[in-house]
Image (tube, rainbow, N blue to C red):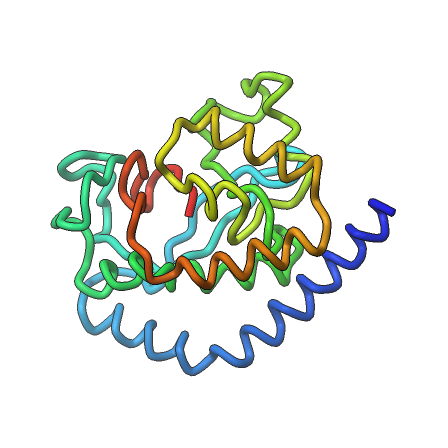
Amino acid sequence: MRKINLFLKRLIDILGSLIGLIIILPILIVISFLIKLTSKGPIFFRQERLGKDGKVFNIIKFRTMVVNAENIGDGLTIKSENDNRITKIGRFLKATSLDELPQLINVLKGEMSLVGPRPPVTYYPYNGYDNYPDWAKTRFLMRPGMTGLAQVTVRNSVSWDERIRIDIEYVNKSNLWLDVKILFITFQKIFKRENIYLQVKNDSGADSK
């Protein structure tokens, strides 16, 4: 039964990401234009993340901060939406999670899923997959997601280890109905701003959005 669920999950990922990219293409074009118009630097931000089985891949997001933000001010930490390293359009993109839309490309490529544990950066909260404790490696048994159980429950309000435990709960209970519920709650929360910046890393660090 689990194998069937995983097959259907991947089929939905392919169809969902392909149809989604076609539908939102005008939005992607507008956002790209606004990013180039309001700040210097590339449209997209790419960063190495840990995926299924600890495999490294490059996640794709819209750039929301100034170039070289990790070496300015508070470094990897974003304390509030008033951080002056966040661009004008970037503040809106972060608040609405629209900066995550390019990850549909990662989903289509098979590097991510629509729903799953969020992919951490390679060096945080543990430095490399091999340094994760054995109990925590369970979260890497499934493709990372654009959204997940931790994002619709605790988001960034608890420690990474606690979020990992919630990710493992998702992995153990994963089914299509649970994915549908998580996606539905995600759409409800898009315009809610609670726990967006608490314990969040900037575009150069870990996130759990």
